Length: 146
Length: 146
Length: 112
Length: 112
Ligand SMILES: Nc1ncnc2c1ncn2[C@@H]1O[C@H](COP(=O)(O)OP(=O)(O)O)[C@@H](O)[C@H]1O
Ligand SMILES: Nc1ncnc2c1ncn2[C@@H]1O[C@H](COP(=O)(O)OP(=O)(O)O)[C@@H](O)[C@H]1O
Image 1 (cartoon, rainbow over the protein chains, first blue to last red):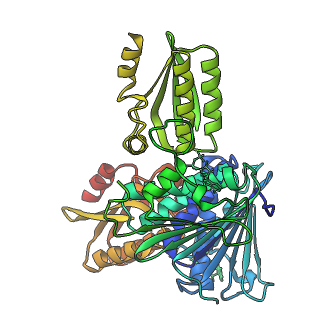
Image 2 (image 1 turned 90 degrees about the vertical axis):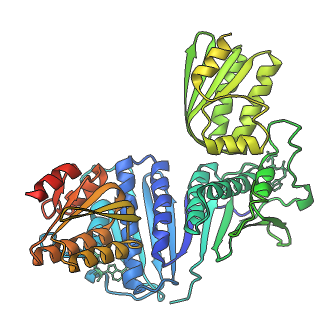
């Protein structure tokens, strides 16, 4: 009976947009389990949706049958999320939101992620792909999320 | 970019009942994605809840920090679910529902699983624990589920 | 799951909200047992806002019913939605419990 | 997501139900584009039953708006729930789109 960390959920899905809704419901419930407010829980859900959408569009260029690993840590002080893909890597510095004044279709995903989460960090050191870590702290001052 | 089966979802959780609701929402959405009716989707969700409840109670005897692996196959003709635990094994022949006429607390979980699913199979051949496979076919005659 | 307990005369009403599963049925069990041990003879469990129940919830209710029967009390259920009613029927618990469509009907009958 | 399209005079009303994400925004985009290409000059997107929208949904709407502007048409939105309104506000799209509280207000204004 191997010990398993009570606060960790692992999930692997294919890079198919049909699974986004299902992942959203998992994230929403994790956030609610941690007693984040409904508003913040919905925001976190949006951030994860945007991260997955970007993996599908940019790392896997729309391929539907690539692997995405999602690890959720329900910790005392924070909700931590890791999203791993095994696709195309880019220099994290090029992953930027568009200027809000320059209205055009696209360019809002990264903006929402950074607005909502306290930490958004891309790691391309793995030979196989990109790992995105996003953190939302429990005692949020409200500054980052409003 | 390793190929990943578009129809497979993997999930690992701890044996903590707080995660049951979250798994239920995943299963419900998988069943709905496959165009099972809402009624049958809810039934399948109950069957999975009962299977997990039994793993927590009987394989792990209430320990909250043991591992449960759930694999969901969204196939053309069926929804197939594998639930693996690494806990106490029992002879599958001893896993039986109670007689419905003998009303008492307990003994209904396996009854629901068998009533709802078309196949319910326990495999204890692994050295590490039990793998439960449950299948619900798409073209259900309605005989097993009503 | 959230439980609100109201008293109307000698009737104790359990208004349950949410989903009853292995996570929260122990909480329901504890509150039911506590009321039964205090000597309540009439308990109504209102399912208006119950969205889901599994076998651990059913086991909790059966245990409560049997305790009530032993001390000559009555436990009733009301306002089960269709999918919950289906579960009771499949498990043949619709004959075991006194189930009412509305809280009013149950209260009227219990007041007799 | 499910889209129902209604016509009221020269106004085309998109009633969307469900969640708008990368899975179904291509469907919305296709239907919007088809109506715009047919020459519709007034489009109202009714959000009454929209529970969720992400950036791919927003991109689809911005694309529609820009196409409408180019052909001197008008695209309006109505009945956004609070959490969707929050998303528009955060992205500063509440000034970019004409947003009405009710379908009536939008229709009245478009009829002018
Ligand atoms: N997972 C990713 N892999 C590679 N590039 C990415 C990834 N996520 C975002 N990017 C880059 O960052 C840009 C901004 O992303 P985003 O704000 O989501 O807008 P959009 O996806 O609509 O272009 C993208 O256009 C893309 O160039
Ligand atoms: N995963 C399991 N591992 C070991 N034994 C099990 C498992 N699931 C069920 N059983 C056995 O089958 C019996 C019937 O299960 P069930 O119908 O769910 O009723 P209950 O769990 O309420 O006793 C259990 O009492 C237990 O002995």
